[in-house]
Length: 203
Image 1 (cartoon, rainbow, N blue to C red):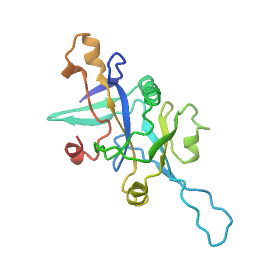
Image 2 (image 1 turned 30 degrees about the horizontal axis):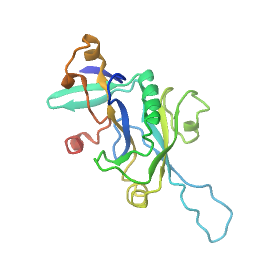
Image 3 (image 1 turned 90 degrees about the vertical axis):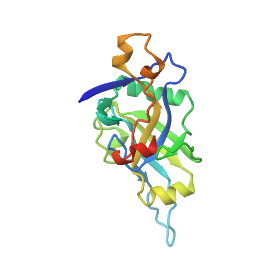
Image 4 (image 1 turned 120 degrees about the horizontal axis):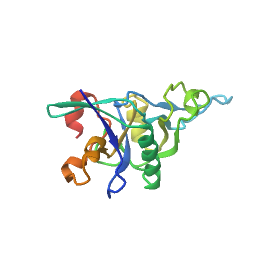
């Protein structure tokens, strides 16, 4: 089965990641951890949730299964592409762009408040929460101030991870010629798909 590297073409007007979706079955197969405040010694008082989600947005060199029509293949992102995608996401000011299960409607009250690349196998913040991810993984923390999403989707464990939405191109086609057509060059895909049987419903 063909393995395709996706890259960012910065010469294009639209490229990189536009939004981060919270989904039930992230293609990168890594979930997030919902963090709560540490318990305080106060009688008859329950702490409110911090409403923070920590998880991987992109993992470098991880193959992700895709199917388009009858064609089956894998895609992956290099460390360089993951790093650049994380930078461009912030540079474009997309921290507040979030969706649920890749729906077209943007969610209010969902913001990325931390973004970093794992650079240390032992001391990275992700290790504190039991996430054993490779170097170069793009980690994010999302603040959820949307009551409906927090109560109905996250506290009930209906969603379990992050998924990016963006524009990338096929390196193989890019390297063949600089004059490839618009249709060939744009793999205008949502990179995480839900469970494979739900893919057609989310595109």
